[in-house]
Image 1 (cartoon, rainbow, N blue to C red):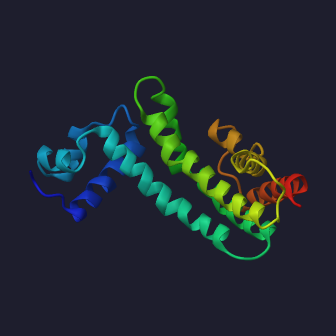
Image 2 (image 1 turned 90 degrees about the vertical axis):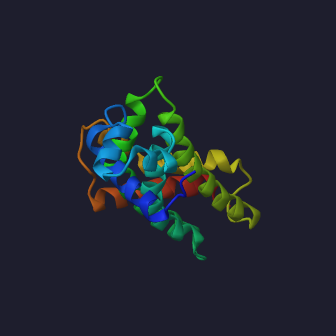
Length: 199
């Protein structure tokens, strides 16, 4: 079997990212990715035996690049309000970006036809909520927030900071929210969340 090359893998992911964002999931084929790369189909299939595999790699790349920075705020010691606001502002700016919008549209378009929606959820919202839940679990153990189901608390927090910003953006009713709109939505959401959960 042909050995996998990390550099080639990154090139293929880069090309696939452009193709998926430009054409969507259904209209992007492995043949298109291979042709753009310029190598043999064997090279592509050695690294990614199925289209879902390379799509997953694209989602993971976008998530790591854009979301990981936000989680640094949850790792900082200090006031919980500051951490939740810092994370929330970065999180909303990612969720309300054109790239992430395109990725989520693919999940909706592929509903019932493939596993794209499941992949998006598992490597996006599910992981995100789990990490927020872990943050709340730490704060609960320290007596900072009330005894609660931290998975539910993570959902409440996300929904409160999003308000209607993400819904209006995803539906195309409004464009990307401004920095001030994001800050206001997060601030209001965090204040409501802490009024319910803070000890």
